[in-house]
Length: 95
Image (cartoon, rainbow, N blue to C red; front, side, top):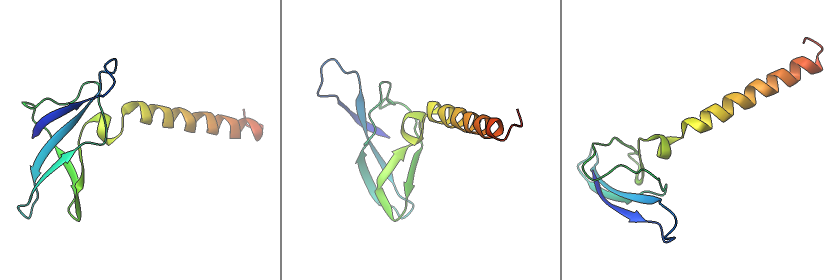
């Protein structure tokens, strides 16, 4: 659950870092300040899904596009692969 939001130190920046708390499978309660700031972070009343490594629960992330990898990242990766393939096919005189 989101317990608080840490606002940016820059008054012109609208980014906040969520603080969230969860209980591990072993029953340990962990509170984490996200290392990813978001312009539209989850709010305290929002239901969230936490992703964490049981060996390092303090390195948890909230399962959102901003924290677990944005869709823009996937789009840019796909575009890069397309352009690379196009370049290779052109170099081999296939196109």
